[in-house]
Amino acid sequence: MEQPLILLDKFENGVAQVTLNNPPFNLNTLESTRQLSDILDQVEADDSIRVVVLASAGTRAFCTGSDIKEFPYVSDDVIEKKLRKENETFSKFEFLSKPTIAAIDALACGGGCEITLACDIRIIAETAQMGLPEIKLGVFPGSGGLFRLPKIIGPARAMELMFRGHFISAGEAERIGLVNQVVPEGQALSAALTLAEELARQPRESIKAIKQGIRQALYSTYEENLQLTLSLSEKVFKTEDCKEGVQAFFEKRKPRFAGVPTISEK
Image (tube, rainbow, N blue to C red; front, side, top):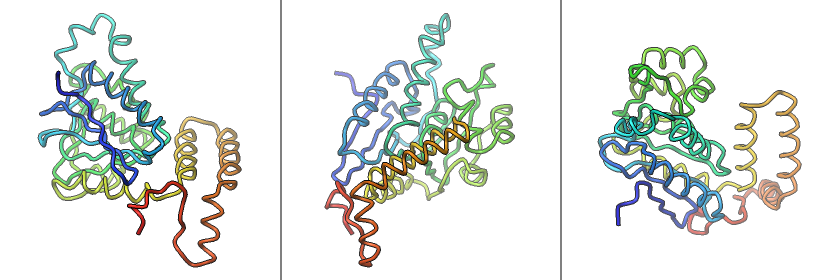
């Protein structure tokens, strides 16, 4: 049996790790996209998973995007054979009901960069680089980068990165707001898992509401955003976690939110 191209590991603290397992470059292939889509469906349906970390195998690259060797096969209908499914799969990360954290420990470019843009938080090793070099192949980022990157760093910087197609350092990525945190070499995954464990101790419905509200706000009108905020607030304020949080505040103690694994209590 061939080694899976995508791995799923679940931990007792409510964190799950999804690993791109196609070293040394962890290329996005038609099969890896299919496997990733299936695993994300599993993750969404599994209530024991509260936070997801996206990682990669090997040390040479996080992911350098598409396998160019597949281009002759898909070139006659690249939309249906490749891009539509890739976009749908990356969007599952963006709209997963659980927080997602990308642990970028080496080069992330092309589709490898685009998949991190669909995550909620990005942590990068100080020696890693990011970039969208598609223009050098005569194309452009077609798996979400075109519309996600401007929402993260603004249209002017996004256009410059795509126009020039060059790689930027971890420090530059942090400076322009592309990543949340820069950590020493080899520590991106451990930092992501530490943050994931912290988030897994937060109240589930509040986390879901924050993510849903922010994600939908990026694609909605003011009135739609307002109505969503009000409807989500009505739901969250009726939860037992809300009652517990308020009671804990008055009792000057840490709240004990429902479903948080006892192994993670501190």
